[in-house]
Length: 212
Image (cartoon, rainbow, N blue to C red; front, side, top):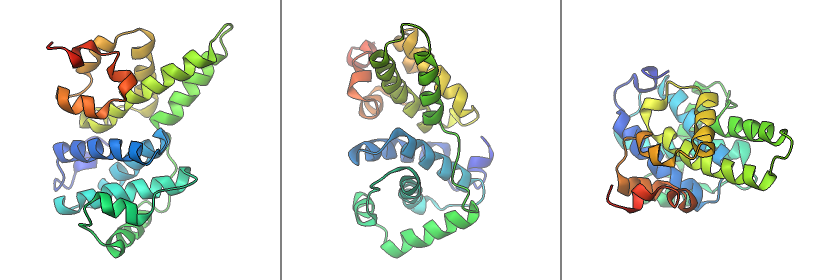
């Protein structure tokens, strides 16, 4: 899927990174689940394997994929108006609905997919089966692991890895207290990392705050 996801070459890896880096704070702004974000990225990448997308429509593709994902997993998805407002009203409601229909047709309405979020939940539940496991600590570790996993969503270099491997790696990074090595995970600079990471995760990375 790694090469196929950008097969049309109308969309570059850099453009994909910028779009998903924008979708991350958008999903937080609406209070959406990590599953909604993961599913949106999955829908976006799968659609790109089937259909060329012009650069000036890429943001519309991002919010449409997010809307479709939210309709699957959220009780109260954001409205079309709210999503278009975040795009500075560069697109119309009709354009979004048209693209939504195209995406659903191209994917044959097959929207369910195993995501990083799904496997993080699974691995967290497995950890709780260990005698003496602390449910609060497990929930905290999962929350931090989601922050690490978000960065892998944005970086195209990680498309080739399965969601289960990315979830396991994100969780292990936290459990082994290897946060100093988080900078190796992505090609983003420090300023963008601070924007993307949840505050509680950024606090565990002293190299983000210092001059390292």
